[in-house]
Length: 291
Image (tube, rainbow, N blue to C red; front, top):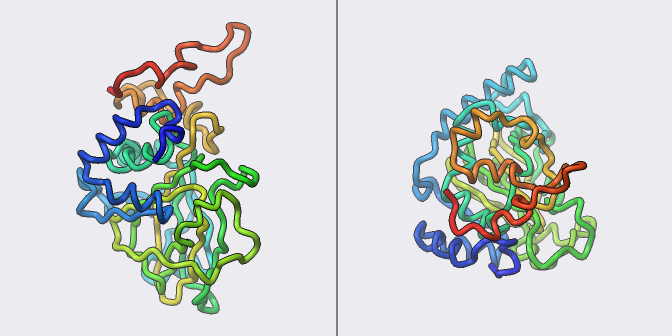
């Protein structure tokens, strides 16, 4: 974690929060491995995982007309890509997750305090047919729009709440340790044999550097592997989803100012004849603390 990576935020403030929350080892893993897992018992305040998962299942049934089959996974055979997008405003639980102090601290350590929410997605994977013991979703980075060579600091970060257990047999997230430091995209199947699984219990938090080479293993047993992923980016990158345009004033008023910042309310783009909002241009640089 370097001052350059802070993007206008205070390195001292972030380091103080890392220490206060006992996350020093996790920040070190982000630096060296490119990802880290925070176990459920370290997520204080506690996260209502069961309620979140049930709400997500209901949303998927509402939007797609079919409820995911959690027991057999038959509704999601050979699925590797997200199956639910843009759901932040569907329930206050998701909005509150955006402000969870552990999530916020680790993402800030990667991107700085001026980062914004880039996208939301649920990854839901059923069995592979035929069963796959190798990578089902090939290695890639989350900075697909960034050409090689990438900057020597992340532009995107991912924070995923594991809604089910993750093991290799259950189709776990796969990654090449330390690959984020190469600052480039993988070439074809480069180093696929070096990919290792993230194995962790439901309710854990996975945070990863957007430059990390990652994918997923095929699932070799019945059931679903599910994760709720929030992607974050630096302030100067356009978000994939329309949080800024669609958030209501009532929603903004319910939360601290940091919530508005994460939803791009302080990003100085879109001006016309009146010129840019200079207060937004300097926002985050002149502040001494977040409310």
